Structures are given as C-alpha cells and as structure tokens.
Image (cartoon, rainbow, N blue to C red; front, side, top):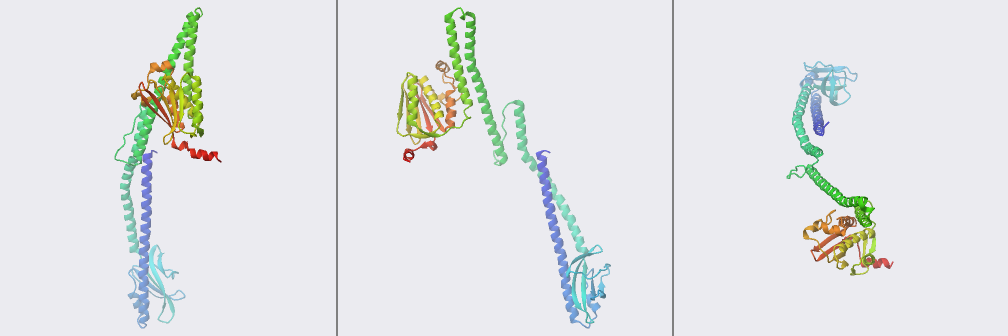
Length: 457
C-alpha cells in the first residue's frame, strides 16, 4: 500500500474510532442520567404517598394509591408472604411483576420492557407491615434514546465525510514532497544529471528542511563528482605524458640503441627520469587516498627542537640557506609530529623549488602558535591563490614541469592540516615571494607555565 493511502486510511480510521468512543460515552452518560432521573422522581412520589397514607388513616387505601399512581405505571402492596394486598395500574400496563425487587430503587427489565421502580415499607390499614412497590414504564425514555442513537449515528457518518476529504488532502500535502523527491531521483538516475527540488520559501516546516537537505546533498555530490572527474582527467593526463616519453625512448632504443651508445644512455636516462616522476606522483596519490586511514596521535612537541631537526636535514640535503627563528623557548604544542613533519617537508620543498634566495622559518606565538615559511622567489598571482590547494592545480605548468611538480603537494598538505586541526594561510606577491603560515588551533597550545609545572613534578 502506498504511503499516501496508508496516511489516508489510518487518519480516517483513527478519527472514526475517536468519534465512536465519544458517541458511546455520551450516549451511556445521557441514558444513565435519564434513568436515574426517573428513579429519583419515583422516590419522591413514594415519600409523598407514604406521608399522605399515614396522615389519612380513615381514607380508602385504594383511592390514595390511585392518586399517586404514575402515568403508565403501577402501585402494588404485598405482605411479608408475598401476597398482594392492593394493586392499581394504568390500563396500558399489562406486565405482571414476579415479586418484590431486592434493590430499593432503580430500573429493571420485565418481559422485555424497562421500568423505573422504588420500594418502601408501609403500615397497612390492618396494622401489618407490608411492602410498597411503585413502578413506571420507561418506554418514552427508551424511545428517546433510540432516536438519540439514530441521530448520533447519522452525525458520525456525516462527520466522516469532511474527515475523509481532509484526510485525502492531508495525505497529498505530506506525500507531495516525497513524490517530488522520488521523481527527481528517478530523473537523476535516468539522465545522469544532478537536479534539485523546488522549495517553497514561505514555508519553514520539516518538509522544507527535507527539501533543503536533499538540495545540499545534491550540491555536495555534484561537487564531489566534478572533482572526481577532474581528478581522473588530470591524473590520466599527468600519467600519459611520461608514458608517452618512455614509449618513445623505448622504440628509439629498439631501433638504434644497440648500435649507438650515446642514444642508449640518453634513452635509459630519460626513461629512468620519467619513471622516477611517475613513482613520485603515484606515491603522492596513494598518500592522499590513505590520508584518513590512520588517526593522528597527538603528543606534546617542542617546536624549537623539532624545527631545528627539520631545518638541519634540509640544509644538509640542498645547497641552500634555510634560516630558523624561534621567538620563545620552550615552545610546546599538541600535534602529531610525523604528519606535521610531512606538512613542513612539502612546504619547504615548494619554497626551495620556486625560489633561489634564502628561506626563512619563523616560529612565534601571536595569540596562538604559528610557523611561517618565507621565500623570496617567483610568487603566486593573486587570482591563483584560491586554487593552490586543489589537486593538480599548477600556477605555471611549464615552470612546474621543469621543477618536477605535479600540483599534489599542497593538496596533501591541506588534508593533513585538516586532520591536525591546523590552518594553512598563503600570502604572496609576484616577483617578491611567498609566506605560508601554519597556524595551530588554540585548543592544541601548551603554555610555558604548564610545561614548567609538568617538568617540576
């Protein structure tokens, strides 16, 4: 069964059950009140009869009983043995009461007809104690209750008409966004194009929130799909070039390499260089793919010693000047030293590739811990700054191919920084240089006071 039909059916049945329960409660409350009212009236008649009977000892008992006989009723007096001493009743009453009721007053059914009754002891004219019974037919009340049942039944049926209509409308309102969502998803499945739901701006209910959430999800999927397509395209392009070069030199070796030693050496050198480039790029791609597999292990790291070790390694590996300045010591942060070193290696290697002057590394605390890497090289155009962390993005493709860049290093650094809760900021002016700031979250700073307290324990 469709959701719309279920909502319509369940809402209609629930309303019907509620109306039936209310109708039954009202009917039985009214009938109980009507019956008890008749019984109370008979109690008053019995009290008046006994008062009159006791005050007129010489009067004919039959006359007194007839004077107080209810319409469509009877009065009966029986002795202790159950024998009738006197009995008067309306002509329309043909029912014979089997005996004295056990209750003092109330209602009872005799031969299929309901009566209200009351009983009381009475001192009869011969001085004996007898039982007085006053009964009244409730056929009028019963008829009124039957009419009430018909009216209430008709009222329930009439009330169900707008309930059924409103239930259908409500089911349509609730399921319309779901149907639109389903239709949109089917269109996406058939066409392969991402689509969004139309959302009513004036609404603020859960259905609007569902539509907005779906649209946000579609936007995210479309963005990720575009990035994936771009990534595959760029990776294919980057791998195609070295493979083409390797294939060309392999064919050259096959034609002339065995006869010409110079061509053989050139081909082998080129193939090796391109193989190394492919290996480096594939390793970076694998690092990006595995970046979320291991959670960072946060430990206290003293930046002064950590940066000294890193800069010393670069000074020994490259014929360049790497200068380090630490504003205070000890300078401690909570971070993963392995991943932080990987970030610094990427940033320092970029600074080395794209500048020929000195490179400065400054660790300082400007409200929070920060590492700045400054170079005095080519710089980055202002319009390229928003895209430098995108995969395969290169400011100058010809220049970066000469330096061996793939446009993956900064993307990997950005992902590692996200894991470490580190913010990367780049400021650059063309032909003047670039400054990359590695800013630690304030939650991962360890103050000098805390470190001294820890050391004194």
